Length: 212
Image 1 (cartoon, helix red, strand yellow):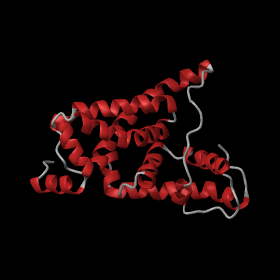
Image 2: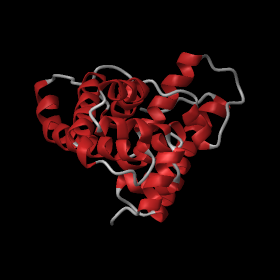
Image 3: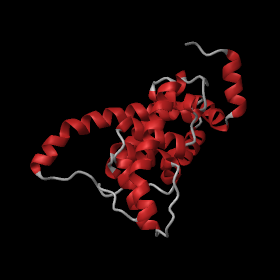
Image 4: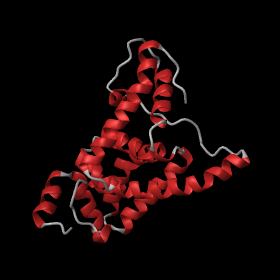
């Protein structure tokens, strides 16, 4: 769908990252470095959660930025910059997930674990479940139990939760990133919250172990 002049002007006026990207389009190296500084850690975190691989996430983040740079001359503001960026990240992560799925059986058969340790998801995922603990939990304990709970979500549910709760994207923005309808995103998040609640509630309220 073509982007109207009014849409481009609106996002240019409202989003400072769009203005930075327009400078990148004009070959401004400092603007590109600024965008990388703003989004590097966020991309690595998101990609790490989506692939389950810390060692892979940094390489994928660099791939995302490379794609952004290569696409700079064709960039037209049609959404928030973060929505455009996370759409590229979604495609990169989807490709990586397909590759990992093809390799998984070989890795298991060879007894060579390729995962590089637990990913850190903070207490925001507990808020995503609609629950708060009734007993005292130390940070490491809470991190571990939330990690195990989020890991039980399927790929699309996990991505929707991360984009919604950690990146604060709206249903419409998540739909654009994941190439779904807003109604499908709402359904994904509803199912994800229900699953997180079912898994986390016994632990947070009574201390029953979450099975990983």
